[in-house]
Length: 630
Ligand code: PRX
Image 1 (cartoon, rainbow, N blue to C red):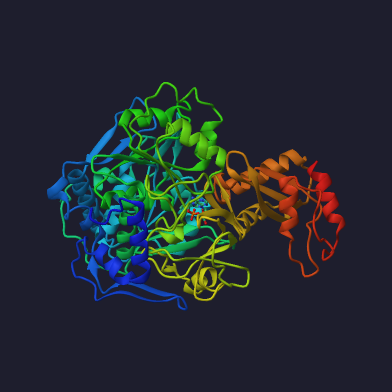
Image 2: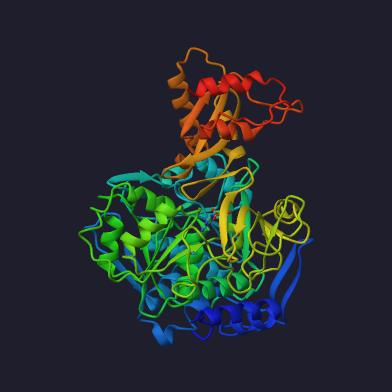
């Protein structure tokens, strides 16, 4: 724990060191890990390629750093507490030693099925411990996992199977949503009608009927029979990919963000321990799903590398009632609680009655992630959940950054509502104007970039390095561009303002507007569509779609429902537009570009001043759209 920051001056000291001597700074942190072979050079990089390599030629396995390195010291400590969706069902507590054996045994089973180092394995599973075991088992043998959120549709799954060239899928029979059982394997079957993998392994969760295809599909509980519960971890190079995680961008096709092994390991552990000020024995709970980067870095890898007890929750915040989060905190005496603003706002709507029955005295730190947290939600969280005594860490980061880049250190960095505050050690930020000039000094606003590499940064997009360069390293020369707008206030504190590209953030989930448009356009009667985000009380942003269609013999209501269903089928229910307006035309410039600025204003309901519309091909369209909204 020597890398722990304990004071504000300690933070400034470490930050300074990380900027003036980045290589010795990260070498010191990396030295506390177990390496099969130490690195030759800490960092080689250029953002032109981009080509970024951390801990060059180091050899290691991330799971040895979770298990072998520590089992002697704390093998009996609880690694995972699993809280099922149904409050009456038994909790599972899995010690580090038990987790080690399960991971080894399952990784041996994967090997027996012919899965090897470098193979891609898709994990499409609910929030059960086996999902974490699946990830770690892949890492153990050097297979590259790609977790796909189990709320994505068969179609979205097919795209990811094909893009990653996956050899296997690890899944479950079904999952629970409140008191409903939802088929998961059935979705995999549907996805495999248009794609192929050699092996499917199915973990039994709900016990519902599934179809098993002979020679391809196997039960998890059967494949592990006879497999040894120990093995030697595969030797991985520092830069070997650990996982691919698909995320949305400003084009229609999701991007496979690739993270490599050593840098990701070093950075997630370091940031987990520091940001949350985790102490051994604490119970830490992050409510994310493992299908998102937060689940990867701060449910599984970061906490387990730090020897933490990490709670995994299968359910939803409102089942069986809106007091569930608070009941779980009391039940497991949770010390650090990390959730999303959208969940806070949704629960805030129920008032404080659902909190009253529970004792939340165990809480020490609260966290927020995924989208800007508005001041009102921040204060509610602080006063009612943190009882005005727990610091809130508003953590800003992205799928591409692998770990938290801007955040308070809990209890150490003075906080301000809605501010992610200061960059963590190693993170050199730049705010730039549209021309790419860096805006120095305080009280400035612009686009957020990072001008120096950090260990857990994106290395490439799977199968498309050119797109990686184009998306992140070409907008501003020599810098990684985040896609977010930001303000640095008079104290030098950072406040994230939200996306400046065609990405919208719905309940903390990233959606590309083009991706939603593509899905809408799949409806046979749709001619053209344009999607924008608009402020939504609970979700942060909602999806507003303007659609031109052939009405055929439909009523507007029927058509709107059909379009929503189409999007649900193509991407998943999370991408369903909140509002659909059928329009006769879209505001386009003479060159055919849709003026989204205007559509955003209409969606927000601020239609008084539409700005300059003189470049529009047909300015009347705007009047019609405004009228149609009414
Ligand atoms: O716009 C920022 C927002 O979420 C985006 C990244 O989304 P994703 O890759 O799905 O990762 C989410 C979890 C790390 C960012 O570009 N975002 C994330 N955290 C914050 C945030 N916006 C404001 N404040 C945050 N704390």
